[in-house]
Length: 202
Image (tube, rainbow, N blue to C red; front, side):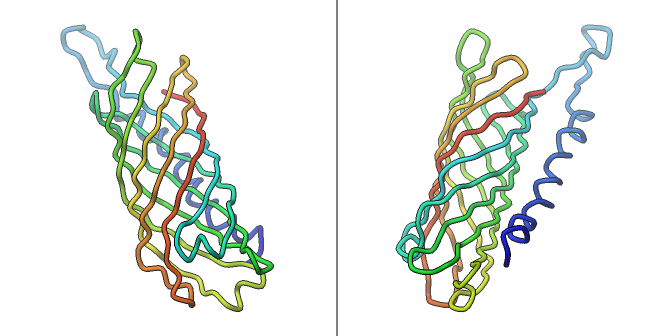
C-alpha cells in the first residue's frame, strides 16, 4: 500500500472526530434555575492535534525502528476528576532490513482520571486506560513477507495538560498492549508512544 493510501485510511477516522465537538456543544449546557436564565454551565470540551515518537517492543521492535506518529483527539470532562477521550492515531515505523515500513492506524477511547490544579484549575495531570482497535499495514518490500493485521489494544497513559484560555497543550506517554498480532511470521510486541498535543478548549 502506497504512502498516500496508507495515510488515507486514517483520514476518514480523523474527519469523523473533527465533528464531535460541534455535536457535543449542544448537549453540554445545563439549565440553572437559580439564575433565572439559560446561561448554562459548560463542560471542558476540546479537540487537539497530536504528534510524537512511536516504537514497538518484542519481535515487532526487533524488526522495526523508531517512527513518527500523528493523530487527532476529541475529549470532554463530564465530572471534576474524570475525563473521556476519543482519538485516531497513525504511525509509520521503518523496517530495519527491508525497503518498507509498518503503518499503524488506531481508533480508540480513553478514560482519564486526574485533578485540576492551580488557582484557576489550568494544570490537569492525569492517568488513563482504555480500549482500541488498530490496523497494522506493512508497505513496500515488506508486503511480500508480512500480512495486514487487525489487533485490539489496551492503552495505559500518563500525562499532563495545561490550558491557556481557549488554547490547551500537553504531553503524554502511552504504553499499549497489543492483542492478536498475526503479520505472517508469528510477530509479537506492544506499542510505546511519547508525544505532545495542542488544540482548543470550548
